[in-house]
Image (cartoon, rainbow, N blue to C red):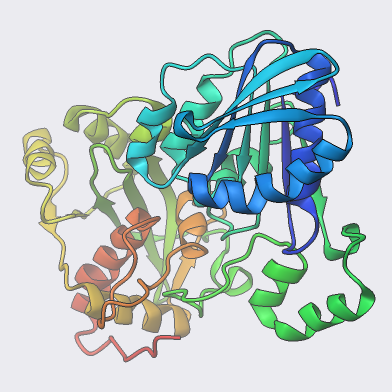
Length: 393
């Protein structure tokens, strides 16, 4: 383990990963450091105390650890065999939580239920670990496959020099066979895969449950026509553009431009996005560019360029979703394997819970908006009665 910069622990519920990770974290901290500061992070400080500290401190006390809980300071002052270290408690509830940990210098951080915390908080916590020999510890239950933690850390563990430990219920010696069978009987389908098998799958509420990679992902044919580009424009939020071409009544999303300013560390100007638009079109004869109607400055930039005709998109959200769903059901949409931004969002685009009305959650929706613009503005113009009702599942 000493050669890794990070430890990633994910898997099924009730698999023992939290306790295993916490005990290992404290043992590592005292074996490697003295008089250093560490961070313990949870969704809230209260949940961190309840879910992690209460069970682990009893075990540590039996092994000779001693501590003082400075509740008002949010700090545990701990001692073991003459060594002392301090562990600060933080809650990563929302985007503003990143300011709580900013400015600290740490020898290590343990993020309990990291998938439930905002990315800004997690990345700020990781940036605090600058002591030589410091290490990052993640513990979480799976979320959807488009979740940033899965995409940036789980799938890229080797690249980030991280050790991934995947837990199942069989790894928890405290669960009897009877209890394991009970959990296995509680869930089915996607819930079983997520909660029992510990897989990163979307559990519920997909806007496009009919999307099937086996059916809808395919290499485009060589002969395509009627090229069109659709665009959802963002400054801080991602900008998504899709190049579409038609063959025998089927529209193929041939290629994409997907720029995430937060991920890349800086926004791009309208002119930079326009150059990307030209690169996406290449030498193809693109008839029109369907653009987010609120992107007035980018529409003006396209007009100044003189190469493309910008067309403000039809932006009735629910009607557009019904149209996309119908196109998917009828097999009239295909996506090239290289369209990774769109394929990721299909697995993460869900309905908002509660609120009394149907509306998609405003997360992982930029390619989804662009695809909706294309279908509603281009495909429905070809077939005015194309849209069919789709049942929300």
